[in-house]
Length: 569
Image (cartoon, rainbow, N blue to C red; front, side, top):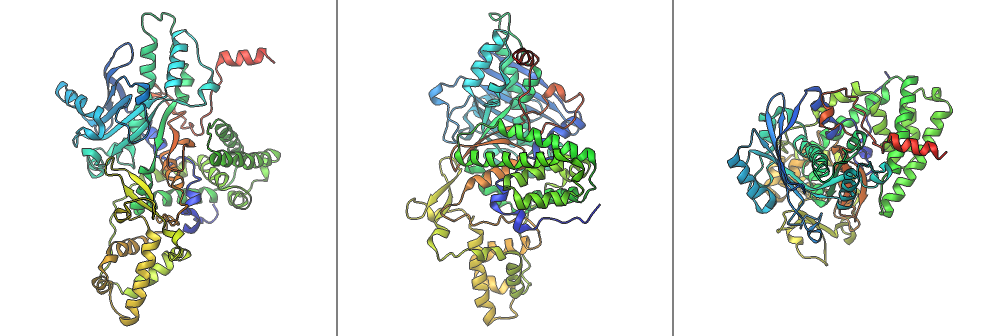
């Protein structure tokens, strides 16, 4: 094995690069499914009380090695004019909660009165998550009609959407009364990895969507109805609509961000240092070809994303052609990595990161239990103020790239909507609320702290940080952040989030890639649709053979479809 060299923070934490990321073996969905299979989780319905139209409730029973949970789903009629994926919606097709233990009749009645109300209702700390979702009406209804007639859908048509339902919010970590992360980590070790409870909610919602579909198909008046082909069941995922709510999380949790990026970068560095074998190169090409087909199946009307996808395909095809010409010419993964950096787009470079990591599961999987961390931003009051200034010059040198005397550099502000307790963007001089803005201008705050530090040190060269803060207490928060994050390699996103042209989409995609989502379809600069668990094993697969190979899912070819296509040749 050659020398292990980590990518520098200036590269790995660049906002545009983070916004070009893809799911990987360390993504939370992949990790969750691996544990579900390895630990033989038992998932079944304890109740499935739906009428012929699919309305009612269902309860999953989830038995894990260390605890038992229930997943409660409420399905109700939603008029087409009331279907809205935005957070301002007040009604949904499905609402749900993941709770501890078994649900008795009394508790079910309470949940039925509150969960469908979402923020307007009440849950308690027995709930690990609160969520809701809307049906993809055109896909669900068309598919239902075909199954009732005994027909299978065209996989290519199904690929245009790739799911039956999409989540519009999945809350956890103490929000709206749900139990906090500390309780999950202590009492539910099976879920003691980042966002494992929330990912489990999405996985079970996907299973429910299939079971509801089959229940509605197999009604007495449809004697010829069939189930959806098993390969299409696996291909269907769960959709997701994500807005600004995700963006501030990465800034407000820098230690966690450092852990996520750090473990990925360590895994990737070890992969690049691993010896090259011909079978690995051949597998690289197979995965790359699959990834290209996956990207071709992405449906988006967003010009920016479509352009990125087109360039990605050009670059990936170039690499695939080179590999096909002579697989034995690859002798060092690092040379391949450096070639990509010099010749390919950011998306192609980051795709290569994910693809190469697939080749060495024994290296990458070992990092999955190191993704959580106890977060605490602290400082040493006895530290010399000069040492703090030196830390800024060394670890935060990037903040001096911005001139905050220029209006463009601080025109955007972030604030919370009082009605929905969700982040929003405003523009100075245009929107009200700048006095209530969130603390996301890290570069500006560090610069201001540094300026005041230099003035203070000039008059007090041996003074401590405590003495500086007595003089300038407004810097307490940023001093704690600087002192803590200066000890880490990653964590701070290298960007000015106050710039007039800041693109929140990069933050959204960064976090979603760590989740494990795919098929990004921006609907504006502020929210994006995507797909979760597409290609993943369904519940009935969990006890069988498992290859952990559901990356970059592509539409399957059905036997009947293959027969038709061959007859047309």
